[in-house]
Length: 182
Image (cartoon, rainbow, N blue to C red; front, top):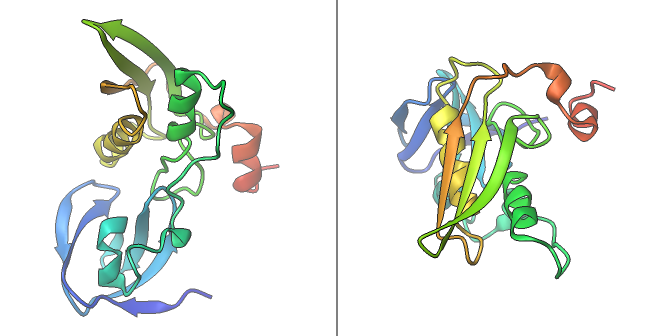
């Protein structure tokens, strides 16, 4: 059973699914519904909101305690390619409403690495489960930020595309298992 938490200070949040930023006042009752990808999805009287892990203290959580959020990736072998590292980081990005990463949801259509002017640039094409989802720019920014943590990557471009349209058949077997679809 999930426990109600009272925010101990005001905190910047993002409304789900609109993607609109707003301030959640101190003293607001919330229930944490998801702690994946380095952020907290909370249910409020006004609906769902996303709070970044650096503001965990507003929820009474020690921000240095990373055990409550999935912020790291599985360790890769020493011979892993830069592309392997990119895919690994993309597996740490989550839709705040769905407990499956964007790779296993089938949202990432393409991932490539190019050298331009001596810089390594990652290019990712991804989609969303619904074209009108306001969280798209937030999820794309999460993906870009994750990629930028990879040593040797100087820039990352994450483009939202709509062709082909996403459908549930694109979810990996692992994703379907997590969602109870198999």
